[in-house]
Image (cartoon, rainbow, N blue to C red):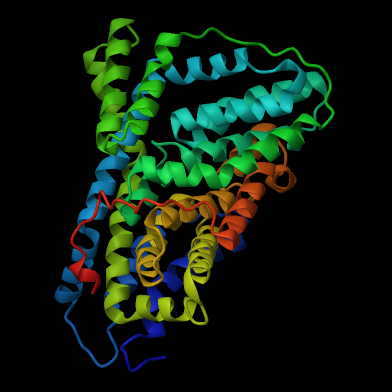
Length: 444
């Protein structure tokens, strides 16, 4: 389907190939983790290089140039560096005991009379500090399983509560890869996105706590390990510096530095081991970094072939004003997350399209970044084939499908996102400051 303006459905074929590979493999095998994302995107990239714009014949060399221009776009490359720094921070924090201390500190203040609400709040604290939902689930799920065994609390219920707390930080944390992707693709600061985002999801947090407080549970004795306030300092430093408005690279750099100093001082590792832990953390993020580059190249080719224009044309067809534009952005990122079961990848994929829609409908970029993160995280937190539920189900030896209905917070987060679109609340009087704005001539 070709349009007079050059937009063409054929330009979307690389994305369709990726979705067919990923979803098809998941359906056939019954396991959506069987198809590696990087392999699927590489095959999609190879297919994109074979295509041509209707009425145009380019050599493979010229198409590779277009691909490299997209993959090497300044926003993508900076995103790669930030991902690597985030991995280094989490690895160093884990090696010097910050993760264990933070979990145990949280458990020590867990309200015994409201175990489920307490587990949720501790999950929120841990995930906000660590910036990773997977890390939070891995750290807290075994404790939640023990609580279930001691108290008789429904295992799917308490694991769904853990998932909710984990998705809180995945959505809001300053060092979460989804936050980084959302702010980078929309050109807004961490603090600005946080202020907009937290106002939208705060009612969901409060409602979740209230609901969990009124669910009857038995009594349980919670075993709390040792913790050190000093070891929690790297996370506190990240939160404070991010709230102070520091650039995300500086925030992560401070976190790594403080974690390294404390770890060296207390003997958690020596200098050589520290370097190894930094490398380990960067290695954890290598796939995601490479995927970001490949997606950038694929999107640039799809843009050249008219696929991006066609998609925007179809999504925005019938849209009227800001609310329609916001709903379109929410729908796009939700659909891609459902297809890929990866909220970071969905944000990176939809981010450029959302930015164009944001400009077209005069949507506050802080709001766009928040909607991308909220809806991708909401769906990620209820997908039975998503990594978070798969890990929790595996640890609890139950089906992830059994957990999904009890993921109260992700469900409410999506509801609050829709209410925010419907009401236009919150809105800020001061204009957004595009602190990461770069030359986007290639988008024209």
